[in-house]
Amino acid sequence: MIRDATDADWPAIWPFMRRIVAAGETFSWDRDITEERARAAWMHRPPGRTVVAVDGSGRIVGTAETHPNHGGPAAHVANAGFMVDPDRGGRGIGRRLAEHVLREARADGYRAMQFNAVVETNTGAVALWRSLGFDVLATVPEAFDHPRHGPVGLHIMHRRL
Amino acid sequence: MIRDATDADWPAIWPFMRRIVAAGETFSWDRDITEERARAAWMHRPPGRTVVAVDGSGRIVGTAETHPNHGGPAAHVANAGFMVDPDRGGRGIGRRLAEHVLREARADGYRAMQFNAVVETNTGAVALWRSLGFDVLATVPEAFDHPRHGPVGLHIMHRRL
Image (cartoon, rainbow over all chains, first blue to last red; front, side, top):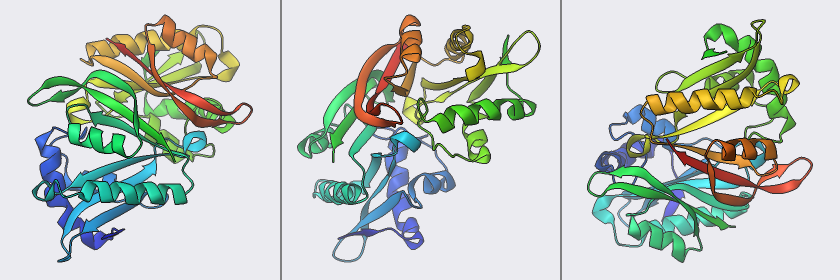
């Protein structure tokens, strides 16, 4: 089930978020980001949105956030971020979060969605976004220092809504 | 002359910044952004930098800011923003600001600079960035609602340092 996140969900989000960010393989955040900054970056007020994916036992297994990618005359293009508990990967949680976020973004009146920094070695994510209609508009060369692969590109991905 | 901005410079920056943002033709900010938010977005602490261009009489005629475009493993790519007092346009102030910012970004260890949202109808800016070695990596279609031209593209521009 996907539902809007509340403040009470944060303590269940932060442990897997911290692991994902500390790994430094998929997110362009400081690897030792503080909990306070992570929370401010993820838990949005309108027009941003934050949702959680909850499994059958009520455990939070993933989260997503949406907000305008730029402001003012460009605020009709959404940006979004997704995190799935690494212990729960490969079960379609990311896809269900994405389908929910795309539906909601369309309902909110966004005309397109853009990802600014999809690590090109994150092939699972790239394949998921392609299967959901996103194209790679460009790849910023060597824009991400991967801890195992070295400098790799960041895809800018986009789809109309 | 280009020099680091100080808090005391803000009152001279805000009047022309407000005009540029309110016009809604070149900046992806809320057109009615508050002074407080604009100041927070522009006047950086390290690792960000903010500079001003000062004319012979000591008047501030332009400003620029630089900061990491993303965090953590992607923090070696800079982003920058530029504003020149519209009453002082066409005198090479933007070019001098850009040359300064590029030099400083290189000295700070950035390996590339990326602009995320250059309005394609802002042909003066596009030509300036091209002349300084930037390429258009991609154009996000109809990503900017121009008050006179309608939906226009946003160029993502990039150069190595």
